[in-house]
Length: 111
Length: 114
Image (cartoon, rainbow over all chains, first blue to last red; front, side, top):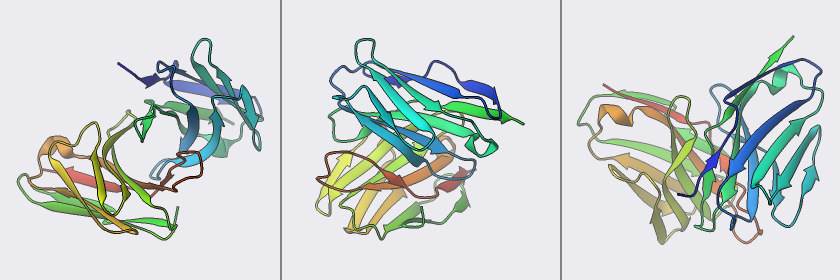
């Protein structure tokens, strides 16, 4: 079936390093993707999005890359900070009028 | 996001009880959603509504019902709660017609069914 998944359930990085969180999707018809950050005890928070007609989009310290050939999405966080520690979800618009979320990757930033 | 509020934030109840979770938003968005999150898992869609007269089932609607009382209010009911409905419940909203489906989430309601 159609699904959005993540390669790594937990990612541990040193403060100041760059982080890369990956996501695989299976629906080639998806045309919109979002990355969310969820801190403990809070709701998911929008980070960055990308449409399928783009390969790359940059925000403040974050970059999303989309590879439609292999159906792969990644979130890059530059100069990772302790405040970046959270669970990160990718989500896709499958055209069924609602987003489908992946299971999440926990990012742990070591001081 | 303070623009999307959920009540209660925490609730403990017993098997068989009827429970209502409420969601209100001041963002002026037409679209509202209810999700469930279980430990270590992503969000699963329960119900969604694209306007006051529109209600749609998500992937896990069994055992739940919803009511869209107004553009700003979307409530989720568990008619007869069971222990496997213990989870974190999130409400979300999104605007219509902006070409994307970016959703804005409330703080969540932690529900425990004993």
